[in-house]
Image 1 (tube, helix red, strand yellow):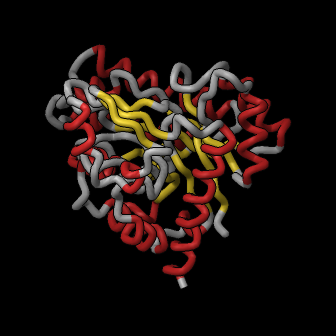
Image 2 (image 1 turned 30 degrees about the vertical axis):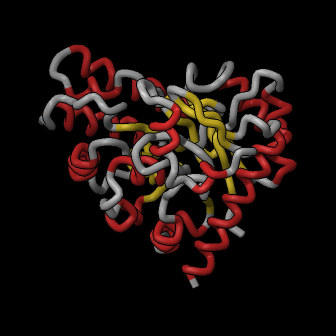
Length: 301
């Protein structure tokens, strides 16, 4: 079996150590973390705790808020590039040598692709190389921005690719990201959704084409060694403005949507996994990731 990892899920009733021990005892081989405020507590302390528990930290998701401003001219764009360089240096100093970043954040349209922003990404790539770090750029809402950056920094040892299955399923299902960037794959965010919203539910609980995804991953050297899930800690998935009937129709394609033990529909969204405690959630996620591992290994033969 491949090595399996996950981003550490929040649970206010459990300490970091308790959650990490559950993750490890379930069978996960490594953990991924996020920069505060996207992760609980102090990153340095959490990395140290993982070391004490014998759990490798594979990567850290760098800050995402306002990332789209990097495409703006002037100081606000420079500030985002400066932030990425500071975070690369900080995460690298903790002994973690891979980070994840978006080239756009959310659905708000960025400024047009421009030379100033592409030069900023060259500077970020140089910072990563200098620190022996790989910044894996993730597919999100606007593929053309990812393509422009990847073309500009092509060949940089400081840049890799992070495949997000949920983002592809919701925003760009026809894009062959793994075909384009599989040779520099450095991370995976395996998650699922309804093909419309970025829901971050567990693999096989949505409608993502996992047979196709596994085939793509099987062709990537990195994914023949390890894969990682990136799912949400939240039980409630918001769908603002939708009635319960509209929510139900929107998620009807999801495999989990017809299991009343897993999903409850309300005006404005739905809850999922609410009836599962933390250990049960981690076990369900592990089973899904092990299934993907088996699929990749079968297709790689």
